[in-house]
View 1 (cartoon, one colour):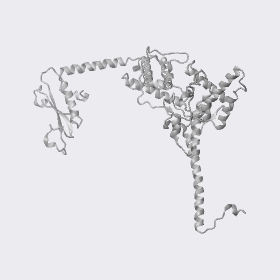
View 2: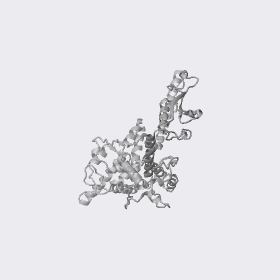
View 3: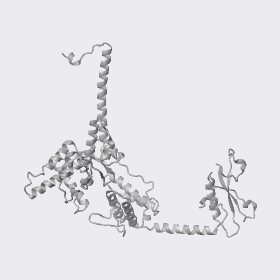
View 4: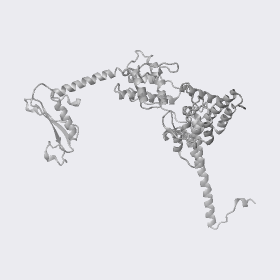
Amino acid sequence: MVPADLEMILPKVSDNPLVPTYTVVSRHSDRCPHRSKGRSYVDCDCFKFISIYDPRETDPKLRQPNPIKAKTRIAAEAERLRQALQDRHNPHIVARQEAEAMIRKLQEKTHSHVTIEKAVGMFLQSKRKEGVSPKRIERYLPLLGNVDPNTFEVIRTRRSNEGRLFAWIKTQTPQPKYISDLTPELVEQFRNSWDFPSDNTDYGSFGDLKRFFDYCVSKKWIEHPMQGMKAPRRKKGSRTTAFSDAQYDAILVAIKSRFPKTTDTLKNKQQYEDAHRLLAFVELQRWSGMALSDAVTFKLSSMKDDGRIRYNRRKTGQLARPTVLPHVVQLLKDTVPVDGLFDLPFLDKTVEFDSNTGRWTRELKDIFKAAGIESVELPQGGAYRQERAPHDHMMRDSFAVGQLRTQYALKQVNLKAIADALGDTMKVFLEHYAPFIAELEEAHDAAQQDIVKAQQAVREEKERAANGEKVVNIAEGRK
C-alpha cells in the first residue's frame, strides 16, 4: 500500500500505455564508505529515496521530479514501497486492491451490526471454551447478563435477571442495539451508573467490562470504548481476618452441643450424622484453608491417609496443596455423605450447586451466632471499616494466619509453602495477609532486639573479666 501522504505528489494513474518507472536510490552521507559507488548503490546504511522517471511528461523538468523519501535506511523496505508505487499503474492489481477494499468495507459494516446480545453470548461462550472456571464465569453474569449462545437471547430466570448492562440499556433513549452503538460516552455513562457498596466489587466489575470490550475489539467489531478510562482505586488494608483461638473453640463447642446424648432412635441417629458432618466440614475448612465452594465439592479421593490434599480451586483453577491434621482425616472418613455419595460427603447432587453453598453458608451463620460471635474486628489498616460480621471465608483466613504464626514460632518462615497450600500466587497471598505478616515481622524484630541486648551484655561481661575487673553477680550483690 502507498502511504496516504504520498498520494498528493505522485504521478496520476492514467490509461496511457507509457508508465513511470521507480528506482530505489541512496543519498550517501559524507561518512559513507560506499559514497563513490554512486546513488544506485543501496546496500549501505544511508537513507533511501525513490527516484521517478515519467515518460508521459514532455517537459524534461517534470519528467524527473524530486525523489520521494522512503523514510528508511533499509533497502528491502524501500523496495517494497517502490513496488507498491509501480503497482499503481497495473490495472489488474489496482482492480484487485479496489475489490479487497470493498470487501473490507462490507465486513466492517457487517461487524458493526453485531447485536449486544450476540457479543455478550459469544464472549461468555469463548470463556467457557478457554476452560475458565465456572466460578469465574458466574462473576460476569450480574454485570453482563446471561445470554444463550445458540439463540443469543437474554436468559431471565427467578434466580438470574438480565444483568446490569441490559437493565441500563432499557433506560436509554434511543436504546443501543448493536455493539458499535456503545460509544465511549455511553460506556462511561454506564460505568458511572454503578452503585456498588464495595470498592472491591467496583474494581472487579471495571476489569470484567474491559475484558468484554477487549474481546469485541479482537473480533474487529469496534474500537475500544474504554481506551484511556482509568480503573477505580481500591483502598489499601485488610478486608477480612481470622478467628481467634477462643472464638474457634467457641464454634467447636456450639457444634458439639448439637450431638445427641444417644443414638437409640432414628431421629437421634440422623441428628448425630448431621452434627458430625457439620463438625467435619468446619474442621476441613479450618485446617485445609478451603473456600466454602471447594469444601462443598471436597472429594475423599483427593486426600491421602497422611492428610495431604490436592485439588484445583473452583475460583481460579489453581492447584492447592494443603495437609490436614490426623483428627481431621479421621473425621472426614467417618462422615456419612449428605447424598449417599461416598466420595463427595458434603455435596447434595439432587439440588443446584448454589443451593448447596447457600445451605452451608446458613449453617455456618447459625453456628457463629450460637458461638456468640456477632462481629469481628479487622486488623489495623482495615480497608473500609473496623468491624464486620463473621463469615465462612474467615475459616480460610484462620488457616493462613495459623500457618504464618506457627512458622514464625518455629523460626522456619516459608511464605510460598502457605501460598501453595492455599492455591494462591505469592502476589495475592502477600496482598491479603500483609497486616499479619507485618505484625509477625514486628514481633520478630522485637525478639531479635532482645537477643542482641542479651548477647551484648555477655560480651561486655567477658571484656571486663579479660581486663581484670571483678565481675559481681547480681544475685550475690543483693545478699
